[in-house]
Amino acid sequence: MLIFLSVTFLLIGSNHALQCVTNCSIGPFEFHTTLHSDDEKCQQRVCASKCSLNLEFLYHTKRYKATFEHNTGSRDFIYITMKPYLSYDVKYSCSKNSNCALAYAQNRITDMSNRAYNVAHIHKQLAPLIENSTKSDSIQCYNMKHTIVQCAPKEVCNVDYNPRDRKARERGCKYFSDPIVMVYDSETYSSFDITCNRNLCNGDATLSEVKAILFEHGLTDGNGRRIAAGTMGIASVLLMLATLTFTAAFYL
Image (cartoon, rainbow, N blue to C red; front, side, top):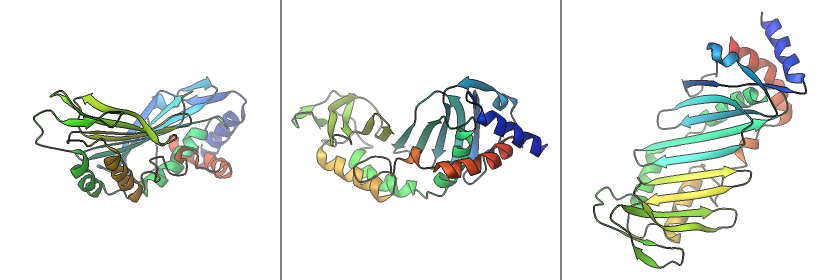
């Protein structure tokens, strides 16, 4: 049976038109657990130009989820709140063969599971910069001209920094939100976004400190971008070697 599955996957993967796994959401799994599925819905394939994958790693619970799709782009997305909560989402697409997303998933799960992000320590460092747990009145924030402005009672401060241009894309008051740090990095767009509820917490000094904290913990590089273009990090030769092994294991 294993030989039959292996030959089938290789034949599918070698066709010019990709037959991608789709409508397949599985998990959560514990970190370091091999991705697998016994669900019949993960047998569904669709003809597409790209096979796609979304991996969501929840570092505060040490679990991950996987969703197989088709024809989506690649990007990394980091989301940190003061609960504390830290998720790292990886969206990846490829067109090498019909099982390239699955092979990439197995390699990336190993990589991300080995990243020992200390969520409690990150929270401890970020909280004094972006969180005021007793906020009740309106606060002051910087705007794009670095002028101090008074926000409405339900507004907080925000700065959206563009790591590619190394300057703020937006800065000012924002309708109420919990303190959040978000990093989005794709092939065409990058953002390092801070929402905070302390007075004047959206200035360049806070931005620099928050970037330094994420860099210290290996979440981003020194300018707030993903490290070494994470979604492009698997060498094609390893991808080919992994495909046969992982596609078989996924369905067993």
